[in-house]
Length: 231
Image (tube, rainbow, N blue to C red; front, side, top):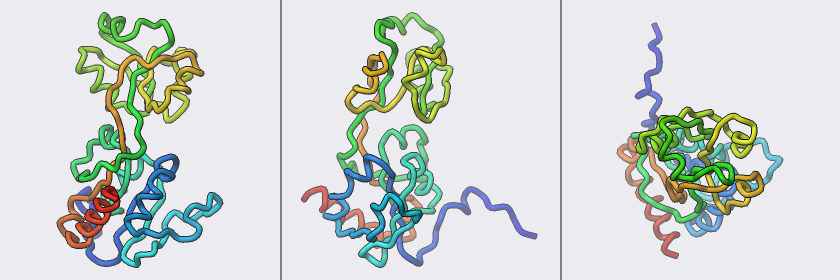
């Protein structure tokens, strides 16, 4: 009789075949390009082709393949061993806090911040000090709850994956917790940043089990990325 797959079984421990590097779609993917080049990673011709339906690509190194996934999914692919290494924002690591992930390198790209924002004239942090409960719209429910709990405030989180800026004006929430880069989107929607929870950059992450089972291969890539950063 077949046994159900346990969480531990899902963590890849195979030592054969190419390593898989998980990369996020979007802005970080554009910023990481020069770093990948300096690390000696040449992409398949259709990697940057927006019309390509492929999600896994060969590279110029036969021992490394690349997958292109949503930024939030990079950590999940690496945590469960489907990819052995990856690049993702520190915001994703803060939200999911996977113990299976080791994040040895800050790549210094994708700089932004996770912040609290509210409608202009809303009272700011001083106004929040008098609250015991608040409705917050965010794609970061864990970060939001931890942040407000540390201030003695219970956060009732409305989980949205986008368009957070609409939530206060449409009555979904009083506040939002979201990534902020320039603040222009907040301003355009009548919001103001009131508290910075964390400054964010992208990290090179590694599956801990893979680091034990394939130490030479992963150690080589860590060294190549360190050299690329130094260059």
